[in-house]
Every structure is written in structure tokens, then in C-alpha cells.
Image 1: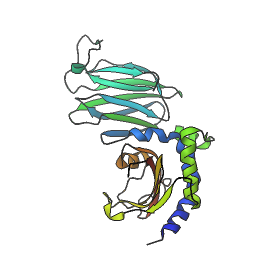
Image 2 (image 1 turned 180 degrees about the horizontal axis):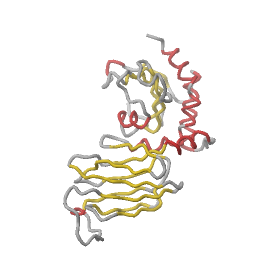
Image 3 (image 1 turned 45 degrees about the vertical axis):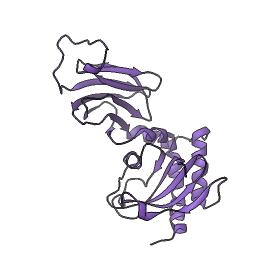
Image 4 (image 1 turned 120 degrees about the vertical axis):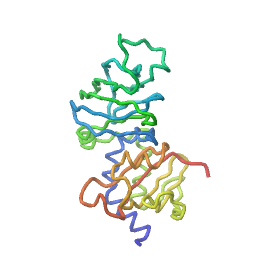
Length: 257
């Protein structure tokens, strides 16, 4: 097995790509079990199952929902114009008025036409099922490419994470942080094994060794790691995406020791 130092060197060689991805990182904090991520392009028609018996959040990664048109269905739709998210309430649990003269029966699809702040449009056909996911996230790869090409504004939250990652990449001490070898025996998933942990007052940065069965996309890895994760980076898609010993870096809110 390679040493922790050599692992850091390999992470450092790819740290620039991580920093360019930080603009989209805050959304990962809310990903958890019960989340479905839909890959989309502009004007896409998407279909997904959702929870039939709980409130469902619909959001766009790296974008905001600016307007929505709903077809009659079994959900009342609430639009949060500030966050740019939608919340779907089952009719039985909502006092919202219904526009349909003949409501659909249980399990009828809910159709939504969504326009985004950045100019994209999507049609969502959401099918309520018992035990379905309570969160739908739509990811537009074209917008992510534009974000990676743009300069990263290093202010506030992003600057703090970027500074930590620069220190990790260079193997240099970072103020008020200590570096520890991770307890690999305590890994809950042997395809996601912590190698090293940088602990500080605000964040913890984990260097992870990913096995063949580990998620290949950052949103899926963030969902597997838990809701306190604020940034995740893994290598770009390519020939090595399903091989063992890939490295990833995850930053999460600091935990009490």
C-alpha cells in the first residue's frame, strides 16, 4: 500500500480541479438517503419516482427554479422564490387549493414545467410511490462545465475550504488544524476507506481511497457520506472511474471529539 505522503502528493496533483468545483459544493450538504439525482440537458423531459406520503423537495444543482407550471395532480406545489426550490405536498396533507376539477387518483403522475434562473427549461414527470425518494435534484452537466471554466470567487465559505485544500495538497501545516491517520478498521463501507483526516475548528478534510464499488460521481459520494458534507471532489470521468485505489477528498463540518 502506498504511504499517506504519496497519497497526498497524488491528491495535490489534482487539487486545482477540486477548487474549480467548489462553487457547486454547497448543495451537497443537503443530499442524504432518499435523494434522486437526475442528469439533464436543456429542454429535457425527465421522469422519476417520488414519495407518495411525504413532502418532496425539487431543486436544481448550480441553478434555481424561477418559474413553474404544474399540471393537475395529487400534489400541491409550493415555490420558494428565494431558494429557488419546489416543495410538493400530498393533497391530503395540504390546505393548498386544487385547480383540477377532476383530481387524479392515487399514484397519478405529477407533471411540472420548470424554468430556471440560468435559462434552462425542464419537464418533470414525477410518479408518487410508497417509500419513494423525498428529494429530487436535477443536474445539468452543461452548466457545470460553464462553472468550471469560470473563476472561483474565494470569499467566505468557499475561501475557507479552498485554503484548507491548498494546505492539504501541499502537505503544509494549516493554522489550528491537526493531521491524523484515519482509523481504516472503522470504515462502514470498505469501498470508501478514510486514509487521512485534517481536523480543525470549522471543517474536517478526509482523504478517501475508493474501491471498485464506490460511487463514481461527486453527488452520489456526498449522499453516501452524509448530510454534513459541504464539498466533495473525485477524479473526472474516464477510463479509471471503475478501478480500485482512486482517491477522493471530502470536506465536512467539524465534529465534536
